[in-house]
Image 1 (cartoon, each protein chain N blue to C red):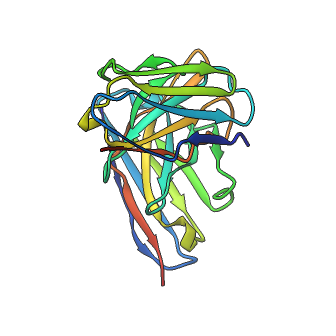
Image 2: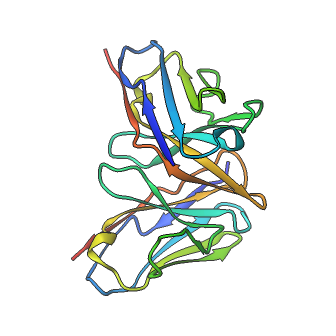
Image 3: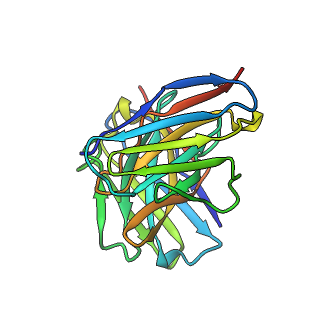
Length: 120
Length: 107
């Protein structure tokens, strides 16, 4: 199982960026997926989650209305469209596979992360 | 939102010591709790899910317990490779919040 994030970089405040997460080694279309971020020197912050079909999505309040999670099951790829970026969005963004069993959920495995820096 | 509070925020212990990390939820979350380990510069990895089930491949010196609001991660005999930051995460309801982390250092 492998997850590879791409698309990070330097962007100005108010700008946009789209992250991608290419999945391999498992049946991508059968699993929910999630994005988690980590600001420099800080802890983990859950960002967003999407169901296996792409119909169901949830967001953290800090990104709601600005970020959009989506997926293309034909390409085994997860996306995070980030608009109106703020300095506080600066972080390493990780994608992870969501495992759900008997109503419980956990994230395994995680990708290596991609760094997003919002600065002028 | 459910708040997850970890303690201590850091701990320094010797090889072979028993280390205990606690995680408290602001409301009951049944057993919907996971623990992750993160080493510097690396992505987190899953240690324990459903509060007490050890992920495949994780050494048996790691164990988890608890339900409701109070949870514990125990390292029974600390090893040098256990130097890392540990996070709890609740999956009872959205948003799936993480604890603030506990940094474990080797004396």
